[in-house]
Amino acid sequence: MKVLTANRLSDGIAVWYADGGWAETVGHADIAHDKTAEDRLEAIGAAAYANNEVVDVNLIDVEVVDGLVEPVRLREKIRAAGPTIRTDLGKQAAPEAIGA
View 1 (tube, rainbow, N blue to C red):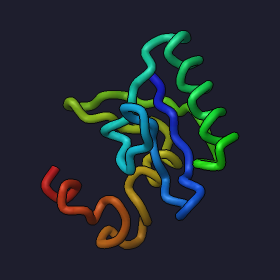
View 2: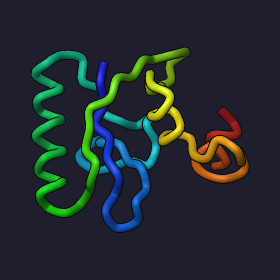
View 3: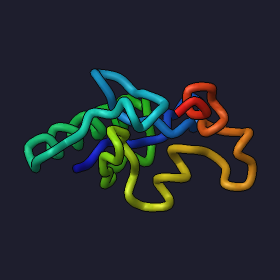
View 4: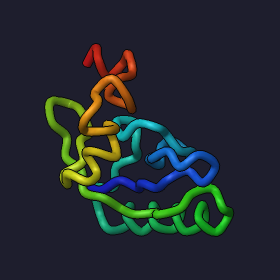
């Protein structure tokens, strides 16, 4: 399973493609379950890059754990959550992350 991720050009925030736009949490991302869906996401990412919406566009591996989408690689887990030394900052400090 893969999702499309990038950094929003306007503020550098890590984002994931979801429902025709860019979500700030990986849990809302559209998941590609096959090569056709991966190709579709790659085309969307290329267009968004060409339109100067995002940079560093990549498909990344994810898994679903207890119903939640989680990146597989450590780098992507950090991008999804925020700083590793201050859990009171970044996306992991958001109310919805604390309640999860």
